[in-house]
Image (cartoon, rainbow, N blue to C red; front, side):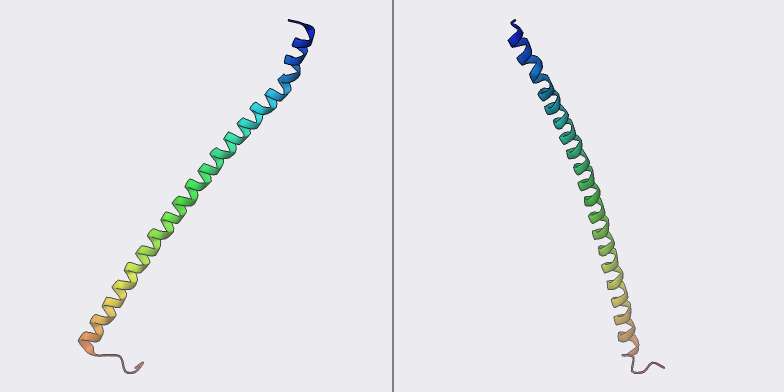
Amino acid sequence: MTPAELGAILGGVPAIVAAITALIVAIRGARAATAKAASAKLTASNAYSTAQQAWGQSNIAKDAIQSHVDSHGPVTSAN
């Protein structure tokens, strides 16, 4: 190996190290983004579940009011 070839190889080492470092940083960033996306999905899923429960409760209340109206007639005054 000639000194020029050795110099060319050693001169490329910092670029290789920089490329590997950039790849590691990119992988870590992708993992963090994936974790954040999973967390956001869980939050959305929980919100959807809460909305479904609220909808169910509103239907129960609506049915109770309708049952009362059916049994006693509509409310005609606040007294």
